[in-house]
Length: 60
Image (cartoon, rainbow, N blue to C red; front, top):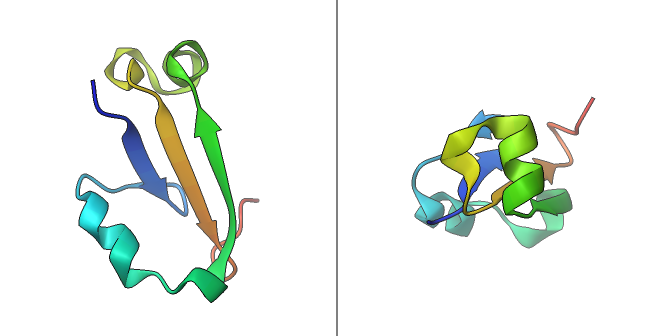
């Protein structure tokens, strides 16, 4: 299973969208493994979850 990708809490199905984010605008990245991913994001997250937070859309 591929991991799910969220950018500023918005699910993004296309990993190529990461190329559009300048590195200097990233606040932090959080990785959830399979078990932790399914706990928070359901059975579609068996492959894990990648959470990217930018400086303009920081995690609240």
